[in-house]
Length: 332
Image (tube, rainbow, N blue to C red; front, side, top):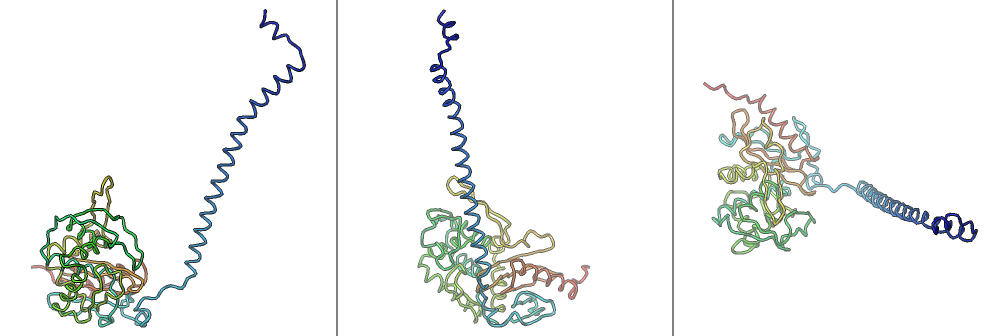
């Protein structure tokens, strides 16, 4: 009876209350939708603003004048050569006969960037230190010279052997610095040992200021670097680590994957025994290698190359040139 009575009520005021209640309930979801819509619009606007700022920053950087390398300042890039190389310095020598096959500005003394790490590796290996000793990365290993980044955070602990592998294969700067910092008699003495070794090898144009190559004070000539490459290639560990394709290291819960900085090590057309790349603005793109070409064991040095891929392009150009000009003698 009660239910029937309520359904039959025709009181206008009750109808208005009921109508207002329904209207409020219907309005609530719309408010939520409106709120979500505003949040989405705000997020979209924020993303657009960040994107706009990034583009403005990129445009500003593009407008900045390109920083010249030491070679460019010295006018070395204006010198032409028969292979039209983009490296302002190039030197190719037969390691066994000492015959110079190609030479361009080989006496110029320039910054060598991470080619430095070859000497870092030589000094570490000849010190007969334990390769299994754990070494922790510290704040002291952070690059304050160029502000370069690294995935090896302070507190990361790897063995000396792992750090050496990363320094030589992937040109890891904090790894190289940690190797020098933890040398038994300290970093400054480690650098002294690098310079002493250079003197022993007759590298008269060479000077090292630190173990990574980030400083433009690390300088050498193509001839000196050819001497270092030939010497370092006598060590099987140097050959193995510099030509390694990739490496994974466990850091806490993370697995860090590294690869070689030289794409030629995976190229089947190349037979490379030892290599090292380098780059800072003052040095340009650099590359040194010992490789077998046309039956010869050649040492190749390319310094101050203009363009990201120009150093390897120059190496390819020289390889093809050597194969045509100095074909290997047929085997009997």
